[in-house]
Image (cartoon, rainbow, N blue to C red):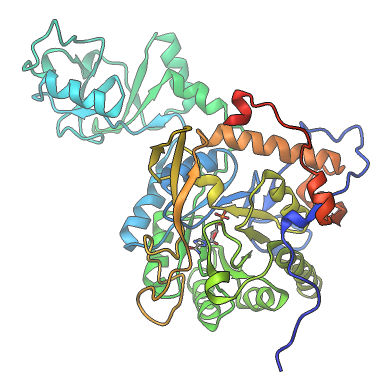
Length: 498
Ligand code: RVP
């Protein structure tokens, strides 16, 4: 006969945190959100620590290189999605690893013989007013000069004139070599009154451009998540079908962490793949999932997972529960797995971080997930709303929306994630939809972080670890849930409408 486990399946909406005593030294400025990403000996530090406890979902509609760069600059980590050819995913990993804060790859490039008319069109297309003139017209060709929108005017200069006639030739330009640091580059920009400093290699090939504005931009991100060589960190999703070919190329491209991506990770295939990965690439952290209970966690931890993702059926675009009747309320799943993680650490001395993946609707749900024992969270809907996410931004009557679709939808056709017994989707486990547009990632995440720190201050916790060990939660009744919301008619301000 089937077994019915104790307890009901609960969601984050059913819980609230109780305030704890707040000591005088506990303030939003002193709260530290850093948290371990990968397995480590208890009492020691994890080889990779996130500076903020956020990861972006392994989804086509979410984890692009642009989003990965923006999230890493804010202390979190993206896992570049894998439902496509290996080379394309590895190229995205490289793009993030090659990003040098403040050093931009030139995207507005021409050859000397190109016309001013062509240059004008290109500048409109890229929105940039400085173009590099290179021998082959690419951003990595031999630098011959720079031309800016101040060097020509469509009404004064013939559109058929070659760019060479208006460019400032390389001999007359201030340039730096590749080993220049951002602060040295910035000093030159000010001392020599430059707007732009090209950086070239030993053969005169263009590597980057440094602009004045990029220096101050870089100062905005004190929590950047970087490796030992100061390159931004990035993760990559992998699957249990082609991992033998995919993992070597992702590692070669510089991926800092991998994660087996499955809607149900409690399987022999995933255990075998984890064992293979740890055997061939022992130094590359690899996570597993998704699971929803102690048994699933223990299975993956014993197979070598460096972190375990928790959550089945709770994602905003997910219809697995409707379609297959499989899943568990996210709060119950996190609580159960967190207890198993503690027991595993007690027995083995190994701490295996856990990630609460999917179903985080409100900012306070992220704090609840941490309080319940998650070391970090993974989100799709949240990140899909920002400029940096790949979905198209579309106008509506009231503003804008961004496209957001599930990996189990016909649009994504990620059959590797949804083992339905063949190389295709027989039925959908996700939907294709829209989310409200939310602007720039850094600005949106700053508000979320402010709320999270404020919650932790009320709970008297200065670190994520302290929060996990001292948080007190209560289950809310239907009546008290209603009491949580404003009970007057709310006056609409421009902010509340947005
Ligand atoms: P959410 O943040 O609620 O949008 O959920 C994102 C998570 O949902 C992903 O990290 C993944 O675990 C899960 N997902 C992705 N696609 C689908 C689906 O099509 N059912 N589910």
